[in-house]
Amino acid sequence: MKFGSVEHPEHIDFTLPPDHPETERVLKSTFTKTKNSRLQVYVGCAKWNKAELKGFYPKGIKDELSYYAKQFNSIELNATFYRLFPKEQFEKWYHKTPDDFKFFPKITNMISHRKRLIDAQDFIPEYVDHVAMLQEKLGTVFLQMHNNFMPKDFSRVDNFINNWPDHLPIALEFRHTDWFNTPEASERLYATLEEHNMANVLVDTAGRRDIMHMRLTNNEAFIRYVGANHPSDYARLEAWVERLKHWVGLGLRKIHFFVHQNIEQESTLLSAYFIERLNAALGINLKIPQSINAGLNTLF
Image (cartoon, rainbow, N blue to C red; front, side, top):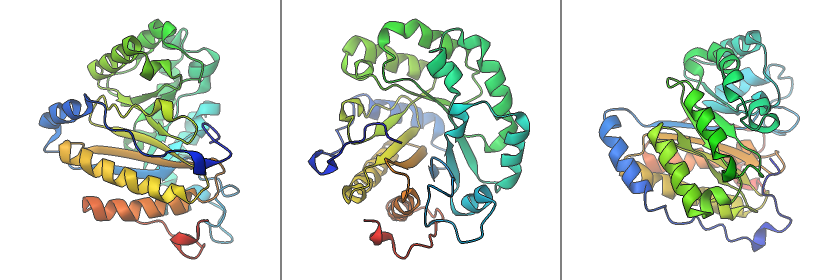
């Protein structure tokens, strides 16, 4: 993921902003409905491509997804952004993965980028029909809008939300700064997402600290973390462990955390480091992915 990449990450202040004032209210209010549910934690990478995840796959591995799914409990399925795969492909992915594995697919760019949500109602049914082949392994779907999609087109967002099926969890990601730094737009967006029980995607990347809104809109933290291929990646992950521990203390029940890098080489190592720390902080027991690279701390 090149979004928000910078040439000199050592010059960036990666301190996580304080929570939005309404995040605590949302977590406490939604927890009353979910307090009897177990904590759900899914951590994964954005892709399982062997060529890019160097050092992760043992020599001779041919079925990359099957191997990946034995190491991780989830994948942020970016491939579905570029084209709508046939139903048979989703069925194959379903059968290649363990019972407790989940896919978090991105909505096709036909809806988000080419049509820019215009006439979304004409495209949503087919997309939903295809991803539904993942059955119980289908996690939260997410919509990522173009950097230049602005609040002036809020009516398109309303149309999309009103035509999205209630039974299918979705998270929305906006990248133009006005969605979060123009009070009228941000308040309307947050209220709309809360009303429809939709997650507000958090993107942590070096060059776009202006969109670190830290505003949850339901009981789901959907986080897309982008490492900068720099030693600071470790400290940034440690900060997220602490923030997620705090949110769990407030009532958070769903954590969906996906690790990217500007150059996707050691995403699996960063993920393993994060999972190890998160296990200790939350008292959980997620499998720690293994790599043929020797030692987590040899990343840089």
